[in-house]
Image (cartoon, rainbow, N blue to C red):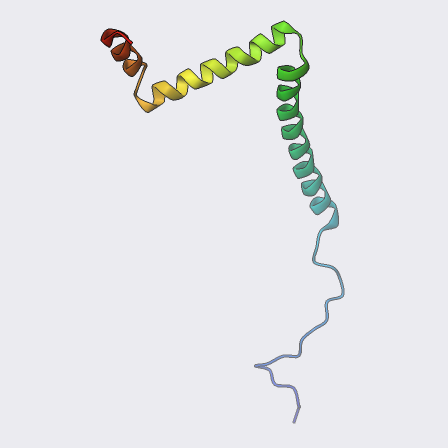
Length: 90
């Protein structure tokens, strides 16, 4: 009679690594590259606003103004409160 129980086999030791090193490295490298690109884009925007020439600074200001106007339109105000104040004489 055998001592091994077929319903509970012994734990086998792995002879090879289950981690795929090269694809794991490529995925990690792609992730880091994306983070670097996002940081560079964000940093370039701040550099233009602070140290750029007058045209670049005005371009950044214009982008900010259009983004703010879009947010106002999305909220549904659309500048109506401003017109009401002008009618009241403020």
